Amino acid sequence: MRFEAEGRRLSADLGDPLSIAIPLDFGGPQPSCFDAPSATARPFRSGAFVGDTRAGGSCNCELLSLAPHCNGTHTECVGHVTDERIAVSDRLRGGLALALLVSLQPVPAGAAAEDSDPPPAADDLLVTARALAEATARHPGPAPQALVLRTLPNPSTRLHRRYEGPAPAPYLSRQAAQWMVEQGILHLVLDLPSADRADDHGRLTAHRVFFGLPAGSRHAPDAARPQASITELAWVAPTIRDGWYLLDLQIPAFLADAAPSRPLLYPVRCE
Image (tube, rainbow, N blue to C red; front, side, top):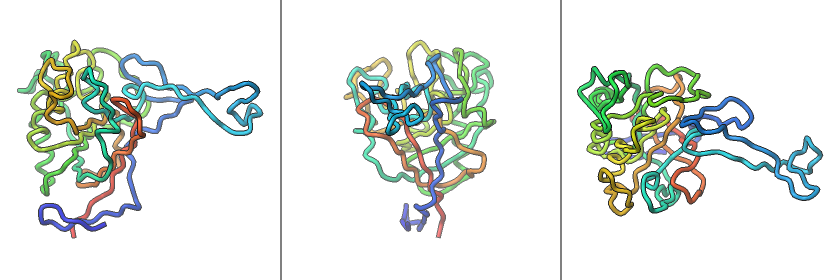
């Protein structure tokens, strides 16, 4: 595929995607957060039929149980924080978005001149606007529609880590979320369990800033950025380099505020 962005000629091989989703093993180790139960699978049974060839069934047919927000890579929309039931599949029409992938080191809140609501504990780790600005400055180019963040260090234990406690992972500062809005980032992909602190008294400050939703509002019409999306619990392998990509956010047609997702990256080259 050849295309132009802000006058620059670019190309991408659409036959060679890189998945940054965590494979969800319903019968093995898997990530989990917010004290949610593990995702499970069991054979469907109806009368004499059993959906398991190992148990004598004619075919395999399983009932899957999972919480999209807690059991693996997922994409959510503004309906995550509104009274109106907004479907992520309605907000995301599909297609490719020009994306920039950057790696950065979160910093202790006590050493950062940035904050959130409620105020972070001094040892909380923040993804800051300053770190984002420095990381993206290393990759000049057209304005991206999507931003993929890989936080460091990046151990493979993330593939099955259970996130526990009030702040088990880094999260976005208020200023970081606002910086992304100002840069026109419409789709955010994180390798973190949440854009916000796990225990933040229900404020979800970064979510609200990113969706353009006023503090305290739970009404979707108030959102200034109703088409924005946040993908969490992604896995950006160390073999995937920082730089420019096309992002394909693959989600099922679930009429829910979030759905399991399989974000794909296609490396972009300058011609």
